[in-house]
Image (cartoon, rainbow over all chains, first blue to last red; front, top):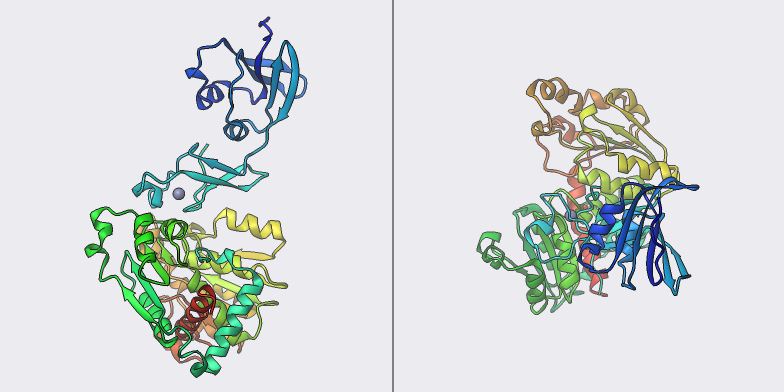
Length: 139
Length: 302
Ligand SMILES: [Zn+2]
């Protein structure tokens, strides 16, 4: 399959296969009006399969959200057809207003103006817990 | 300015410091009788817990301080919809330190994030209750003379028992501590607690048979097995007797083992055990007051 390479913009590479649409949605890419390609299940030497998103615009990405959904992702910044910057994502230490606590006894259920904050508590298991009640984030 | 919301926020050396201050208070109460002159503790209890509130208030009075107490949650502005954050800011204008109990998990943390004075978590739902753990620790220190090289048994509801999880996370930091976790299969310690123990290489065993491990224990920490935790009454009735402590069951225990319980008890320790010198649960209550005194002094920088 052939997809145009972009001249200026961002390529989100090595996305966990199947997670492309979730990244698209959670990064708010559906609100952009530039040219965007989502490629699902592209062959990958390293991962077997991977998703890729190409964005033909220079936008500010929420790398915490991206690192949370696909900790193995790489972000490539393309300028004049050249890859000028390559950043590897990792699990962020903190997630603010990305996931919602589902514990009915949590203070965030009665005080909805509180920010939903989750902290990384187990790196190997990619576990996040609500900072208020320590309930595990549901994937 | 610092708050205490979770026992894990206190380092081993801070716990040692609190324990030694508490012991000094016990030995020389007159030295501390005016330490908090002119200071005010606000007890904000959004759910009733008379014994914990009285313990905090007695602690402050014995330090020479005063207490501002909310009459009841129902008559407070919380029932008029004021947020915890706003309440914390308002009370910061009146008092020097807050002890807060709240039915919602995390509420004292929200208060601490917004108050300009220290906040002590006096229990947030089924989540944290650090001053209970401090009471437990002072009891262990006074009765056993050490925190290391102890075999600590927990018996009863280890799934929902927050006092159990907190004491495990406080005790796992000491050398030579081993845990014996005694519970019915329905109420075992959650996996994340066991993973922490595995990660730190702390030895533990799980069993449903209290009698088989009794002779090993230096400490037996009993908790309540509540009927509502079981799916059916049959299971509850079948199991509850195995987790009730009686003088007969204590016969095989070490002569210097101590029996602890966070109280209130229902029937999990028979009243006949109270006369046994190994019973320490009423000492825990008294120790709780001393540790609250030590904590108030520390957080007020006195
Ligand atoms: Zn929560």
